Image (tube, rainbow, N blue to C red):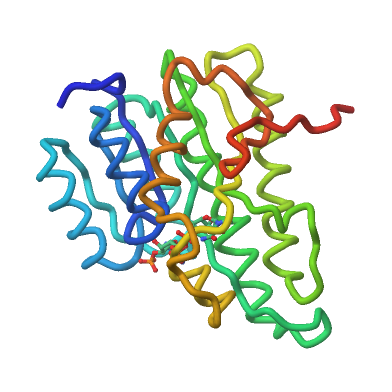
Length: 245
Ligand code: NAP
């Protein structure tokens, strides 16, 4: 492989399908070794085949992000093998149900918060020391416009993505003196299983393919991405500033 990510190690969660799958493939095309996580072994194996077909390399790590001890172990395993982590794409997420806030079942709310928020924090905790060892660390946390829009019936997902952005910003401000850059990324409406679950009547052909969205996301992991603590909006191809305290 030849690309500007040669020698870089990248961890992508939710790599079995959708945006995560194609982002992992793009990173591998750019020369990074990809550590690909998700529960669905078949999806990870398809990704591995696709990465090998373009001359790249991957390590598959099938596990459930609800398993917090496994997230802790992952950081240790990456340290043992590579001693550092250059790129994190914290992409895995779940939608939960779309219903009035008072009708959301407790187990649904807890699952959304567990996968989208608690697992993301636990992952940050697990890999932060490894990313500090990189001379060019780049962490991208996938968010949604729902973090800000707060449309009716989207409470668990909206609340979880607002929390993800708070994690990203806090981590970024704590890392300001390091080469490590940390941003939230809003991919926008994309032709994936999650989008189809949210909008079952929508014609998927009207939406951008995850391959095209992934190219933009992967392009945010190199040395030329020097922003931190910001939100990148893929659809608008621009960074949005938060109001700083
Ligand atoms: P997707 O097609 O549903 O894929 C979600 C990924 O997350 C899958 O690889 C899934 O893998 C993984 N995942 C879910 N639960 C998991 C768990 N418990 N443990 C491990 N992995 C788990 O979703 P997507 O549309 O590509 O979304 C990717 C990210 O973009 C999400 O954070 C989403 O919120 C955000 N986003 C998407 C859109 C959109 O329009 N698609 C818009 C805005 C934001 P397994 O099922 O194999 O575990």
